Every structure is written in C-alpha cells, then in structure tokens.
Image (cartoon, rainbow, N blue to C red; front, side, top):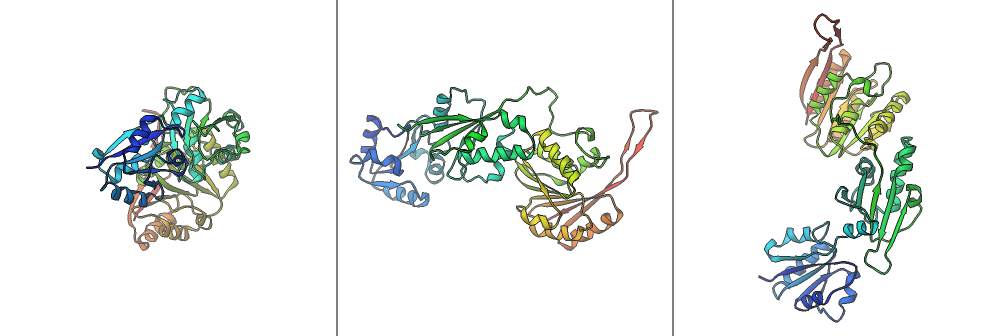
Length: 405
C-alpha cells in the first residue's frame, strides 16, 4: 500500500528533509501559496482545492507511488488531516506536524493559550459570533474570508452597544497576528473600535481578551428565582411553572429556539444559561418588556439571546426555522402563531404553550391537533409556604400544552 505523507509547514520554508521526502513522491498536493518553493523539485502537482477533485486525484496517484500533502502548521488542528482521515485508511497516513498557527500567534502575543477557548469561524454564521465569544475571558479564533478581524470587532462592538454595556465595551482587547512565519508578518493590538477600522491579511489569527471579576462559588446553571430576573409588576413566569415548561421543551444543546411573547424573558434567560450554544430569539412587542429582556441579557451575559422587537406572527418571518417554540403570550393571535410555527418547525421539534386564560387552554390543544401534532396537556397548581403554621400562598393554575411533531 502506497503511503500519504502529510507534511506541516511553518511559513513557506521547506527544510532539506522536507525536500528529500517530497522528491521521492509520485505526486504532491499543495496550495498555490506553497507551490512556488517547490518549482523544479516536484513534477506532478495536485491542487488542494476543490477537495473532492483532490481526493480522487490522490487515489489515482497512489496506484503509482507515494503522495505528499503539504499543509500549513499542524494538519490535524483545523487542517486537511481531518478530510484525509475520512477518505483514506489511518494506517496509510503519516503525519509530520509543524507548529500550528495558534501556537505561533500566542508565542508572538506572549500569552499562555492552555486556558483559551479555541474556535474556527470557517463557514460560521455571523449571528452566532457574539454568543460564542463574549462569555469567555480569552478566545483564539481561526478566521475566514467572511469572518475577518475587523468584521468580528464590529459585530462585538454593535452587540455591546445595543445592550448599553459600555464598561464591557472598553474592557475588550483584540490582537491580530498576520502572515505568521512570512516576511510580511505583523502583530496588531487595539480596542474593538480601533480594530473595526483596519484591514488585515487573509492569513491571520485573532485573540479576544477581556477581564472578568472573580465568580462566586455558588454559580449554578438552573434555578433562578423571580426576584433575580428583571420584570414588571409581577409579570413573570413563576419559578415552578418555568421549571415545568423547560422540562416539556426538552431543549437541544444546539439549534434555534423561539420564545414568542417573551414578557420579561425569564424562559429565554434560563434556556440560554442551560444551553449556551442554543440560539434563542425572544419576541416581544411591548417596550417595557423589551427593556426588561435587554436588562436580563446584559445582567447574565447571555449573548446567545437576541431580542426581536415586534408582533407575532408577522415578525417571525425574519427568524431562522426553529427546533423548539414556546408561546407565552399571543396577543389574541394564537391560531395564526401556531399555524406559522407549525409550518416552520423542524422535524422532531416541539411547541409548548403556557395558558393562563381558559380560552387558550381550550383552543391550543385543538389547534395543535389540527396541525398534526401529538398533544400532551398538564395543569399545574402551586401552593407556597415557608414551613409549618406559616401563611400559604396559592398561585393561579397554569395549563401547559405540548405539541410534538
């Protein structure tokens, strides 16, 4: 069986050992940027893109002898190694890693990177960037042609400005390492506003840093009390009811969640804290509710929550298709909202409706059944007291209707 030598290169310099190895190969896979130093050394060159074509040409070349694949840095760190392992036997692949771009960047920045969150932004949608980056003190980013350093800075800046988080805005620093290992290598540092105005080489690594105050030892993921969530005049989903709603939603770790009629955003707050990689869209039409939601997003640094100011169902057309939907308020448009949600809900999804009014408790199950959902209805009665012989508080019964697709 012919072998595939996967050779990592730092910068664009090939050692004598590299050249000797490449000279023994029938073909070499290489990007246009790294091919120039190999002119006259290698005869049969295979472009690295498009990937499907490259894989087929490598399979054909292996019938004649060994093949080398030239990669930048460590081929097994966000590199071509993963693709090769999908298409060829692991025993056929021999890896010669160089320093990864992130290792080189942190050496230039003079910062440890064992405590950093590592993210590749290749192909990632911009709507997810702030949610993935802002909760963390140190984030290293592999960028792409769309998610450039200046665009990342603008996205983070706008998110924090919209939330009125001036202190966080001033606290964040970005460092950019361009063209590592090349004669054009450059290191740039600055605040978000400064980086947002600059242009950078396509070959770059970004470090986002911010200082966080020490967290207390009683940090928890679930179980916020009503008094810990900003709301108006008691208009909030009560603790016990919130727990049942989240249980019925069976939230996925990833995906899209619509909280329709968000009110104070209490369901969104708990959902976002439980599932930090879930995209949460909270729809609220009342200005007072919108202010409370924004305050809760900022207060709990839940940047995976996006406030959608407007009226359902019309505003829902702007949102990506959901995996889960919670309807906490409908403004008299329950039938229309359920119709839109049912059409947009992804396969295997759920719609959960909270009914305070008897009319909603009666109509929601029927509307869901008409849309082809299987339906589960549960009514919750809550009694609170502080111990024996203490006054008891009785809360209004709430009906929770779940539709499963």
